[in-house]
Image 1 (tube, one colour):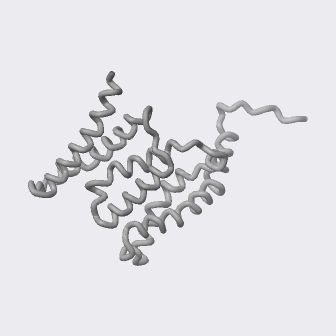
Image 2 (cartoon, rainbow, N blue to C red):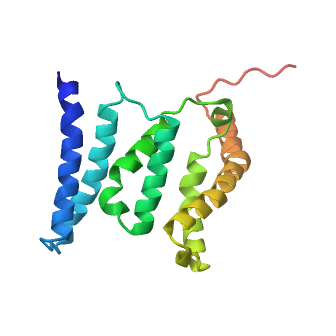
Image 3 (cartoon, rainbow, N blue to C red):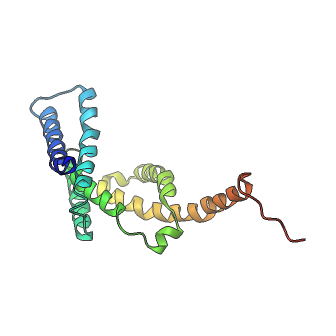
Length: 179
């Protein structure tokens, strides 16, 4: 019963928060960032929770995720993603995250490399003047540049470090060497 109710309550709350933001930043002209900064992440959280709330009945298919990415990029280019991009972003991120793992994803873990290199690459691109090309272009350029860096990081730094950690960990029993 609670899950069935949450299935409807979460999207309603996410839409209510979006409506509050539209009113606060529009006709109400709320200038106190304290309230706006609270509404912003709440909308994203509730949109993600709403997509999760329907996960037992609806899973984003690849074309849903592609449409969500396109919608989010269009909203970003038009300057509306911060107000109306919560649901497309939630569908894209949670859908991509729920894709079945393939061998190439289990052999390489690029997540930490993406985390480490995305911000510096974005800043470098902006310093090189790509901000004039638009947000979507910068996102695509960042992904194109960061994924190879993340793969190199996994291959040359992280994987050897994990292997060395296993060798140096005193809790791991060392097999006796042949004499």
